[in-house]
Image 1 (cartoon, rainbow, N blue to C red):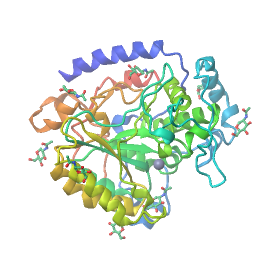
Image 2 (image 1 turned 45 degrees about the vertical axis):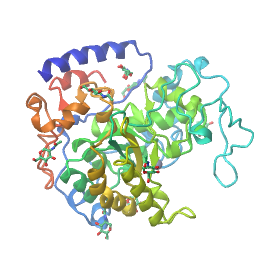
Image 3 (image 1 turned 90 degrees about the vertical axis):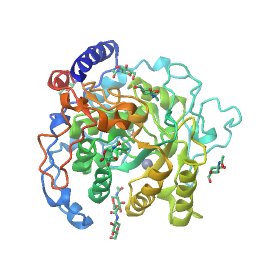
Image 4 (image 1 turned 120 degrees about the horizontal axis):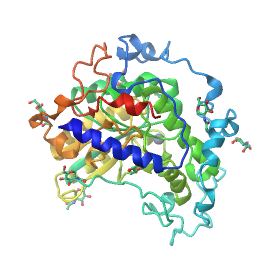
Length: 411
Ligand SMILES: *[C@@H]1O[C@H](CO)[C@@H](O)[C@H](O)[C@H]1NC(C)=O
Ligand SMILES: *[C@@H]1O[C@H](CO)[C@@H](O)[C@H](O)[C@H]1NC(C)=O
Ligand SMILES: *[C@@H]1O[C@H](CO)[C@@H](O)[C@H](O)[C@H]1NC(C)=O
Ligand SMILES: *[C@@H]1O[C@H](CO)[C@@H](O)[C@H](O)[C@H]1NC(C)=O
Ligand SMILES: *[C@@H]1O[C@H](CO)[C@@H](O)[C@H](O)[C@H]1NC(C)=O
Ligand SMILES: *[C@@H]1O[C@H](CO)[C@@H](O)[C@H](O)[C@H]1NC(C)=O
Ligand SMILES: *[C@@H]1O[C@H](CO)[C@@H](O)[C@H](O)[C@H]1NC(C)=O
Ligand SMILES: *[C@@H]1O[C@H](CO)[C@@H](O)[C@H](O)[C@H]1NC(C)=O
Ligand SMILES: [Zn+2]
């Protein structure tokens, strides 16, 4: 049943692709349905040193073909490469929103809002007014909350990371899927983390190459940050994300328009735990973050989300943020009807990656998972490749058409 449905959708997907003029030139030898994660210390240990010390990526990386790690993605000559130039020139820049200027940073590195008309916010600049409904034409609107009532949209930024197996084990043991916003530089440094993210059934999305304030970058730099992150995820996992999240939510209609040229849409949030800031930003303590979690949890049972759900910003960035997430999980579960990744709460199914053959469950399918027998006709990601100790359950929630090979060869 799912088979036929998949085949029909694939045909549509390919038609849409043909009509889309933008040149993307991702190559990957990785089949996302057969991810191979070996049973070695760096993928199974919970000791940070053991996991990270001798990290051996399963790829040989041609450093000349990638931007420098954690530098703006035009670095290392990327913006003059044939590949990037072809991409850049395939975009009709005359259609870009004409009046939206590149923003600047003050001496302290923070965004400079001086002189900007915040009251009218002509650029739909999130950092100025939290605007998420674009004012310019031809621009994808941001997604800020799950539409399903009493639903917690679970998202983690800033991965992957060599040392996060314990956290991914926790999610796996709870059969819990999340949207993971990966930094391109981290994906290249720690590919097993990204491979595990996909294999475990999480929704992978981009979080830029070097985590800059996007509105302060040139058109060329914005495009490179988005492109090389998508390419990095494709290179190591075999899927190319169509959703992304800007660092600190810094987004305006110029940046949205550039993302839209890559058919990419931003996923923001409507609740922010501020977890990364504890003991880092003045006035933010671990208690502040725990109180944020408490409030958001209470909203799950006091009617705040009776008609729509939320999307909560949290991070896998370090031990502390992961611990906040794990400690609060049982109470979130008690107070909300559902905790799901954004792809699932929005019924995105097969439109989250360029590879249309990769399909996530609809909200109904996930919620009624136990009643469903549909999984019989799908192939789980990496089902045939794993020898990883902790990975005994395959993700029945993720349906993959076995015709994948046919589609994959198009990219
Ligand atoms: C662009 O996104 C739309 C809506 O999600 C989708 O229908 C279309 O197939 C996508 N095109 C490409 C090239 O991925
Ligand atoms: C390429 O990017 C670098 C670094 O951002 C910049 O200095 C240089 O001017 C760019 N080159 C071209 C040809 O645009
Ligand atoms: C696409 O990649 C292939 C293989 O790496 C290369 O030969 C070709 O020139 C690239 N095309 C563009 C438009 O960059
Ligand atoms: C629900 O809880 C939140 C967080 O404590 C609070 O801000 C909000 O006012 C409460 N809403 C209702 C309807 O009680
Ligand atoms: C990787 O994870 C470790 C441990 O959680 C953390 O201390 C470190 O900052 C992370 N690195 C990056 C680049 O996020
Ligand atoms: C954080 O570190 C402590 C102490 O090393 C450890 O017990 C805990 O499991 C770690 N948390 C995560 C999420 O790795
Ligand atoms: C998701 O799809 C189900 C039907 O499969 C529908 O009932 C639900 O309203 C949809 N939710 C959203 C947010 O589109
Ligand atoms: C499915 O059943 C298992 C075991 O009975 C249970 O732990 C799990 O919560 C159920 N999942 C859903 C989505 O209802
Ligand atoms: Zn981030």
